[in-house]
Image (cartoon, rainbow, N blue to C red; front, side, top):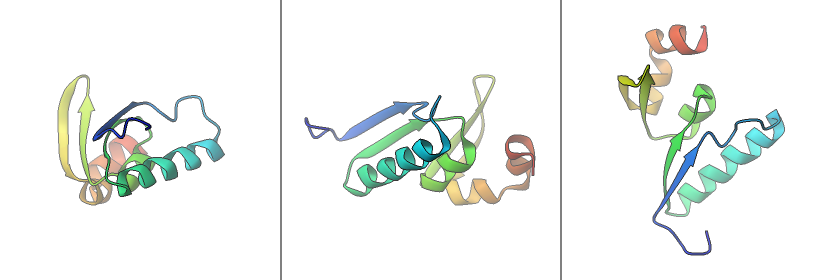
Length: 86
């Protein structure tokens, strides 16, 4: 962050972290984005990711199967069943 990037790319930043550290990580990602840095987040934690994202793309076996506003995807019954077990 010292070089003041325009874009931060994160690949699975929550992998291996305790639940408390995951919460802190996503809070930090949200703050970085609010400070004006675009964030490209690749993450399997669907609930956390859609909670902080503005837009999302869902990949399944390397192919895009869904895309749209994060809040819309989070409310989508197909996504909730397939990826959240709800």
